[in-house]
Image (cartoon, rainbow, N blue to C red; front, side, top):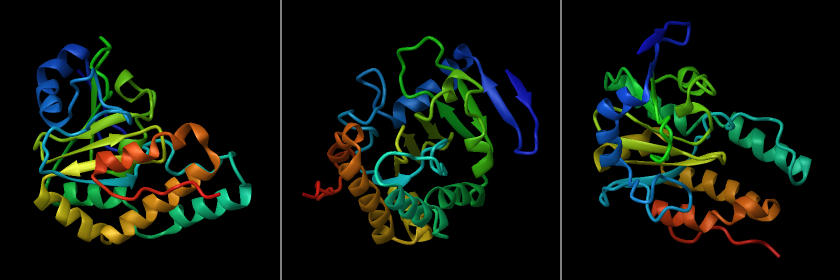
Length: 225
């Protein structure tokens, strides 16, 4: 294991062997990897049925992009500015809760268990730290990854889209939902994003219904005529 200390805080890199010994058992208790990994087409993401799940803006690399080119530039700009400038971010309140609870490290792992290079990274629970690990190790080579900590209370599947799926124990998630601005705000953000996807992006549109099913939500957006 090596440690690099920079302004963003310590980032620890774990070899595949170290990851298997230290993190894989916990990962497998949190996430359902029975199909070989976690993905947007999975039957489920989290093992614990009692967990509360929400769709939130949380692509660890793409969330703050301003270069999206598909669809109408005017509508894209309006959507991006609305999401970017709203003071109630969805990811930051999660990190704030972890800091409040004295969690010192977030574990990052690649969402499939089939690759022998399934290493791990841990970072401090700050937005710059979790988003700055891109390409530094196999676990973070892609936007898609699993995040959790050693308490096992929560997990986050960061997808290749602008949104991911966050789940956790009810008491933890109730604190999160209150801090982020309420479930209505979370649904408003998700519905607006996925409505835009349905309108202009045929590839990602195929995932909309499954994301809502994974979250246990009813009534996903439908394509407008």
